[in-house]
Image 1 (tube, rainbow, N blue to C red):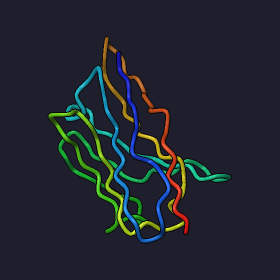
Image 2: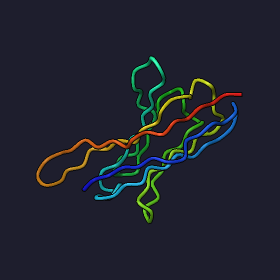
Image 3: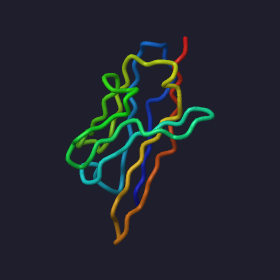
Length: 119
């Protein structure tokens, strides 16, 4: 059974850092990759960062140079290191992946973790 669970959110001052972690079970992240998305109040869900099964990464322009997505293979987690945080980074952050299992593709989401950037 595929499960994703985020952790690491919280309240941080502008300019601060947080590290989010997405713990995966039921599949290997290195085989399928992972995405981090966020949704701020009143806004649509936004793709923030992607790491594919080759380890290639991509970011939305607003976080380039500040956020880093990575995979910890031993723990089977996908982490999002967020530095130089801004109030506009405030959102619920979700990890998401698509896994091919039992002959079909499935779309899986974590429950989300709140990130609040405020002084």
